[in-house]
Image (cartoon, rainbow, N blue to C red; front, side, top):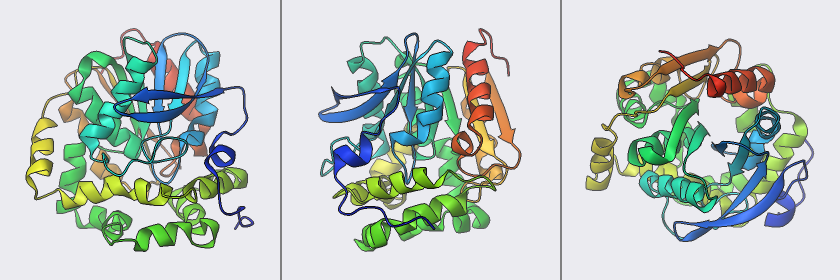
Length: 312
């Protein structure tokens, strides 16, 4: 276990981490979003998952920029340096955050790359706003309709996603995530990784970011909506909307040792893609393949992005 992170965490010191990238804020969908950007060329927008923030893409920012892309990693609503609004954490609105950022960056479209919750939102954005999504790459997350089916019908997946059910309790998850300077954040990332988890300094950064006031609450709110809406009209309507097929080339990446999202749950998402679909399973990696083996992940992603005709 790493040494306790300084507390309380402040947004600037916890999130504006140094590197070759530039930090700035952009306005979109009625909120302010922090981004880190590097490079020039076609836009690649990177969407983080739980319990992380933009920093999870630090390796890919450099690799993509070196490969001739404009790489941008954004903090999702309520996380990192982005606005922590009192509402707006349903996936349809969060996907509008993503497409709004694309517009605010002055680009006609983007290749979306999402991990975990960011992958869920990338699937959603590609279905809802197809003209703004040039290509789609998703890691460690099935299509939303596959996610719903697996969580409800697959006992093993229900057990693997037990943390999501635990998030439904009021206030307790927030207190657990911020206790002992965010110690649980580091434990979750280590438990969900394969034999090569992210380095200790990265874990400390994730702990600090989660301890920013209100960040833990905002981080779990999307999962509360995903479960509590299962039988509600808004959730049923969203599930129906996601029947709309994805019509852009799609790369689906997954770690064979992922204990959070079973390979069986993720595989088969191609049935919702009416475009070239490529499935890539990384042997020996867990829930964070882009951090556990950044070279292999970045190479796979960049080669696919540069392939003019990615085939099924």
